[in-house]
Length: 488
Image (cartoon, rainbow, N blue to C red):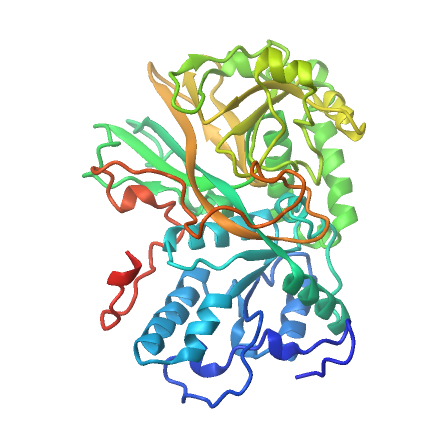
């Protein structure tokens, strides 16, 4: 393990978790040192070209290899199922060390926005009495979630010294809460053609939580398919999602061309030109503006649904939870006092239960974000937002959740596709020193606030347990022999 002789070579014992905590079949070990920051590490070895695999090797060399998991081999819900089940068993047996581990446990996830969102969804679904806060290592192209909480947007070094410096940041990090958002999509079951409007093999990683609502659920309608899931950073629709879809499709076909972050960003820009994000009227005259594609309604906290006016020039709409989009840009900006008074617009907070809804005309419009005070077209702040797509506007559009795009079929007969987004839950994040995200309770610094309950949502009596989950941890179950009544 290393010595604690300097700031850069601190004691790795602070992060170490012994095998008997991680694996039920292991012999109980005698421990004399209680770690101050025990960490479970999840790494997407397929992210960042070779970086994911290299990072996996380094973490396993520095920590107990059994506390570092490759997400391409084992899903996080299965890992946490095993570890938390074992922790509960050990605590019932009077193991004080296990109690301290659970109390101080932190999670580290290395990957892009989709990978980080996956883990956040799992932790949200588990509804643990002491949910662990999460730190993120940027291994993707955009890394918006990572950047929002001060972990940077550039791929990190994978050598021992770089990892040690990152772990030291984790040890010093502050806790913040972050809103999550439930998304429901309903469309008529096609009378012919493919069974589902979204082929399972084409389902983006960040849409892992989407699944058909059970036949007994009141959200179901006869003859309709209903999907639902969640997101943490943003939902977008229109030209920006179309460019992202083209980028992901190209990367799947030619992965050897996308092993460098700078090259990836260059390819993204080229595809933006080809897809007509800059010159739509010349190259893509069929591209529709948002007002042509959908009727949009919003609801403020506790209010009624009202129509949202979308200017006819808007070809991309973004619903933001975090102050980072497209690699660290802030489309909402900070409204001045006049805007706050006249339109009731506020600064963006990550825990206020509101989405910032922003529109863009084209990529040239997006370039205003490079200016320190630049922003998109502020449309609204809402606790709920609903999109209704009707027949005739187009046969498909493009959508994106937390960096993961998909091609969405639109009605081919006299029917409507509905998408509704609403505030869902909160989880704890770890915020580094350069955190950009702000709390509504303390806008000046990322400090912990409120009580220990990570949920601010109220559920009605008829809400089933299934309705209270994103679906990211469907396999999570505590072992039968473990009494979890004190957790409910």
